[in-house]
Amino acid sequence: MTEVASMWRLIDTGPLPGPDNMAIDEALLRSFDPRTSPPVLRLYGWQPAALSLGRFQKCAEVLDLERCQADHIPIVRRITGGGVIYHADELTYSIVCGPDQIPPASSVKDSFRVLTGFLLAFYRLLGLEAAYAADALPDGTMLGERTPFCFAGKESFDILIDGAKIGGNAQRRVKGAIFQHGSIPLENRAGTGLSYMKERSLAHAQGATSLADCGIFGHDCLPRLLAESFEKYFSVNFYAEGLSQSEQQLAAELLVQKYSTNLWNLDGVG
Image 1 (cartoon, one colour):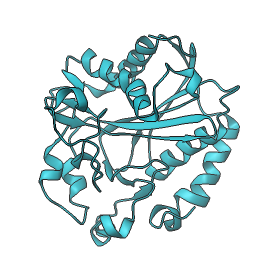
Image 2 (tube, one colour):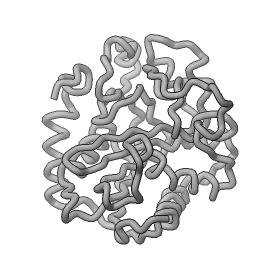
Image 3 (cartoon, one colour):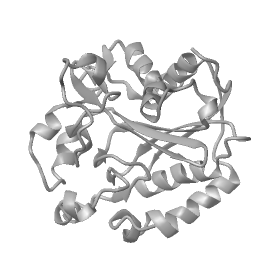
Image 4 (tube, one colour):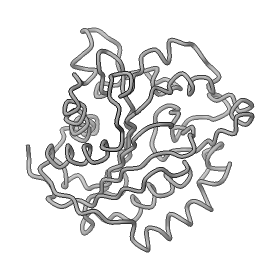
């Protein structure tokens, strides 16, 4: 493993509402200076359950808004691309780092392989046979097809367990910084998420799995095991701390001005 930044911040904010989670992620990215800032791994959850839209999705075209409103399901828009994800009973991570703070990648696409390697290590630590879609699926399988619902399609470096996709990962690059976040489903809620889509073909949820589906329970230890897998895989050390005062202030501003507004969440303006 190529040497990377040896010290990383570990921020565990626990379960929060969707708008708060997305505001914190963006605040961490905006506050990061690749020349001076230590890289960050943040761990969090979602409470209450929420739907997140990819940055460029058109909400009214992909979601059944009447059903979402009737069930009081919050909708939040991510700063990353991809399809709709229903966040419930999951462990979520986000990474903020500079390209020079991680092992080298040959391309942006290859950086997904680099930055998701710790997830493979984590699943294997749990005794699961995890592999990238590009390695696990038969030759000729179509990969990279864009789908409105995250779990309906597979990318080359999506992680599969017994042929089923577990979680999803998305990335954004800005001003010399890499931001990536992803989900680790504890329970399989893909069917519930699909029920809020306009297109509700059952096949779109059948290719998803979760830790519970794989016989993994006892979720309290998972954040620790995930952090340990990250440390071992990248040969780094963590120091745990909360958000800085300036990060908290920026997150609070983004929450009010952006992530609590329909202009951003539903219309994508902001």
